[in-house]
Length: 240
Image (cartoon, one colour):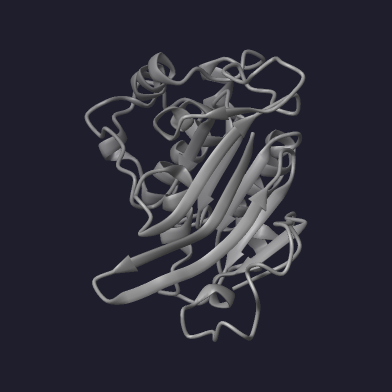
């Protein structure tokens, strides 16, 4: 899948979080949205996910021959995806997403798989093992530690059969062992897929070839500092 932001902007009340953002997120590439706390990284990721609406501009989704997930187009050229169908191609892990804590880990992943299937190459017991949650299948999530809950959130994102993986502060609540496990899994299961994450911690995004500093798209930039019409969208340039 390719995701294109065209002169996109998001405003809360009178404050612009970002504005005049033109960018292409290309298949099989890895992107880090960086910036200090409160700068709007998570807001941009939610816009990309279609979870919140933008205030101006457009977000376009297209599938094509480089998409590998179950729901991807099998044709030889790209095809536009309606925004209300883009969720089928995306998986998301974020601190603000709640788990169904009355369920066991096994029940929760089976529930998730009913709406968004997992990769066919791995079963749910193997997924739990891969994220270090072995022998927790019958344990209710409400009894999980915060680090265990984060591992479960990462599992549902990394192992879903989607073209795009979206990660918001993926190492939240993880200890050193959990961070090392995340780094191993995101490299393995992010290969060949579009990965976009928001973070201000380099150990979460050191595998990303592309970096986007959200501060480059604040409305305080003057129109003459960087021109949004100076050229086509690319993955290694910023514009305003």
